[in-house]
Amino acid sequence: MALGLIEVRGLAAAIGVLDTMAKTAEARLIDVKKDMGGGLVTIVIEGDVSAVTACVQAGEASCTSEVIAARVFANPDPQMLMYVDNSYKSMRLDSKREALGIIEVYGFVCAMTAADAALKAADVRLIGIERTKGESGIGLIVALKFTGRTGAVNAAIEAGTRAAKQIGEVISTDVNALPDGGIDKMVHYTNLKSD
Image 1 (cartoon, helix red, strand yellow):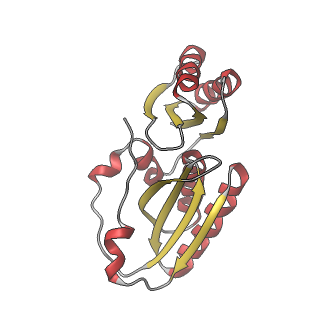
Image 2 (cartoon, one colour):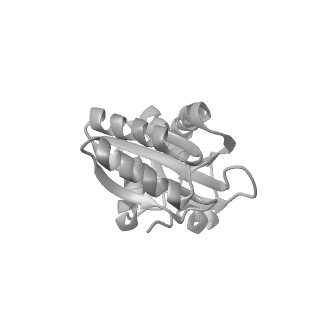
């Protein structure tokens, strides 16, 4: 099952894009993330690869506003998918003493691109996603938080950063080989608002 994401600026544009996508091919709407920040709206659909690709391409072409990013994931990583369909809310996390890696990017689609690449590159866990509002440009900053063995976290951060740079802007990255237990609450926190 493929996953398609298209991130646009403005609700009116998003509604038009979604209408075009719905009329283009058979794909199921999973979520519309419209309270993320910066006036950005992300439409999330799923279906077979050809239908999702056709929908995303038609949506991009029909957008009356700015398309921030669009992406089709032919085989999305299940951990990344949890943050797209909001099933992460039922996830329970343990507090192992493992390395911590963070990738911070502009935009939700860029973040999911980084997450998918990082998770496929190494044996790491995605333990939180945090959004903040930027001051200019896209206006939405998303931080991805990964844990695992230090070498795996380094490999994941490198792969995720490379993938993110192909469609958007990376703000910063960091790998902490031995994070203090006192930061667990902040690390395991997720704040993705979505209606």
